Image (cartoon, rainbow, N blue to C red):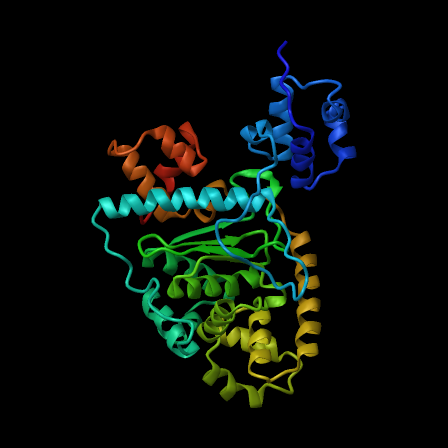
Length: 384
């Protein structure tokens, strides 16, 4: 049985990187301390299992020194003066996979004769939020007040997502790494990210986050596309980091969802009502959290009032979500995780022999009959 040498500092780095502890790792790998001391060496199979357990790329374990991992895009966090946190393996892996999908889609679209999207990277952060919001609506084929046609703000979120996808951007909603249900993405680390591009801009929403927060995240991401700016962000308490682009994206997102003029007109008759946020949410078809955030931006309420409402609403949503079933329709779930526009392009390329099916499986995370079944039900049999 062949055994392989591994540097102690690399093993320690892998454990720390995974967010685990020596005590927890030792339950699965009783000889881990002996590997670190050099008294014993792991077998190749043990090292493969260790890499999987710690979510470490296998090749990294053979390095002399731990690699310095950095996100390929800026990560803006609402942390004040706190030290920036290291990105988790879950976030790193998710961004890398999205970059792979975007790169393939970009090449595919260019080969198909696609022109750059007119709205991508079309405005500057110095432009007024009203002008940026109008550009966003034009790109999506929306009129001001577009969400009022929908019965609920949850329906408007779906319409918003679909409109972004139809505009030419890639949209992914996922709360786990790929299809691995044991690796849940942490909304406290990031609510979403954007990979800017003029051919295939990509927006990713952390679906483990509350639905109320996702509407604002999606609008914030669309502003990033308009500005041509890639970033990951946490938007803690729906506040941007101390970065000019982040703040411009927030202002544009707020104006897009709840136009200043309309809220100022409606507020005098609502401000003394105990359910004023709920009433406004029904009017604009956004969540109450978005309305409260907009009221704060326009100095209609004080910060403490917003934070009190935000925390109460957040706790209420946790209670509501805890009572819901975690199950769901597989095909509908994949529509969110993969986006029908992306899968339809991959399926078409595979069918036409422009890519191997093995590559299609790798890009989508769906394999064999599962891939065929999903494509036939949602791409061939659907509107795509």
